[in-house]
Picture 1 (cartoon, rainbow, N blue to C red):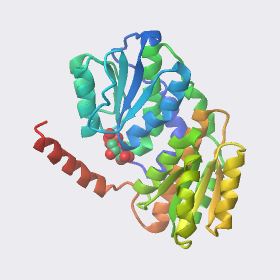
Picture 2: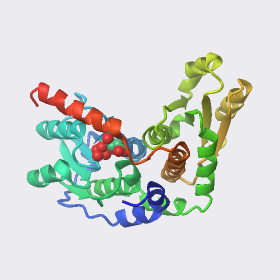
Picture 3: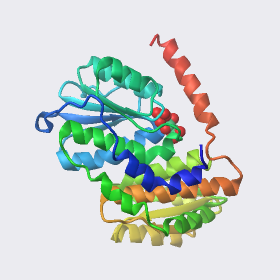
Length: 326
Ligand code: PA5
């Protein structure tokens, strides 16, 4: 496996390649009679559901659920489409929810690089996309996003426009922005502030700093933060917390919040992630924060590829499921 930073730097090529993914066993569903779409997945795979849910909901005008758990909400049933996404194909929460969806008569499809998710899909004759192997799940975001889009485009005869993101991932200034962000965050706890229209980017940023840089991180969302987090800012230690405002366009409230953070004497950096569309903005922003989190890992002397604690959690989850008799 090449260095984590190199993998991020090459995201445009990863995306271009994955846009040519084959959908195995594609069927045509009538988008007009669909009752909803559920995305099943955890962590670096689950974020694909968060990113696409806003887009798909806007495009199809249907309820969209992102399921990050062992069980499906009760309202997901016949007439729904469930897309299970797991890079390894072996994540227990995703597999359990996938099996539950099959049992309930939901139309089910999968995206993975291999593992049980691909073998179960083959066995059950369900549509799937197999993305390239050899990445860490979180660094395979372009492949997972493109693979899932290809799947939805085939099944629902729609166009999601992921291809327009390639140009955003060729921005030569992005690495400099990432370097500056990493240096700014060194020695602090990152708190990302985002407007709710790009909440998935804030969540992604938090996750990237957790997993790659091994630091506690938070995401706070406007306008909700104005009703709770903002009060917590009054009394928290100034020397630890570093605010990063992820700004997609001029926004009076975001402007107020940025100056208010400064007024309270916290260090704050604004990163302009705004691009032509929602998908470009979220993918470009994910690229910058991903690179920054790996650079911060290097500055802190930790290995961005290691996630020992996730391994420990996954063993505990296995024991938990066995104890439940599943
Ligand atoms: O990025 C990571 O390594 C994790 O967040 C994983 O994505 C998460 O543990 C789920 O695993 P998978 O993506 O293989 O389903």
